[in-house]
Image (tube, rainbow, N blue to C red; front, side):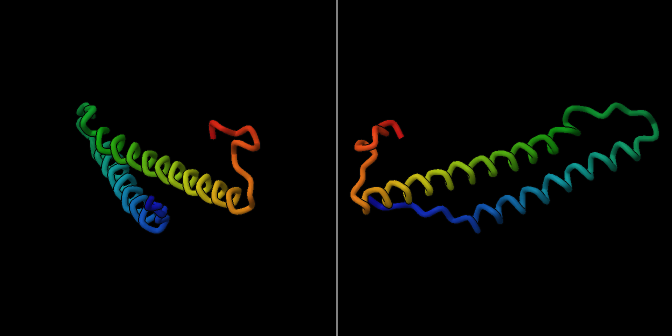
Length: 95
């Protein structure tokens, strides 16, 4: 069995890039609203990029949490095995 390793640096870089995209999209929307002197309607599409990039930021953060929790679970399981304990011995079969 090959253990995958959570590469925090890679995920942090992805989050930085997506956060910059989000802030740029937000600033573009704000600029469009400020320059809207003719009272033209701002459409859903104008908001869509902001919403999509924000959703991507949240998704990346959720993935980072999930991966780090899995890594912590593996490390704790290994530590218990090395110390002679098992999850079953402690009544933790669904962990």
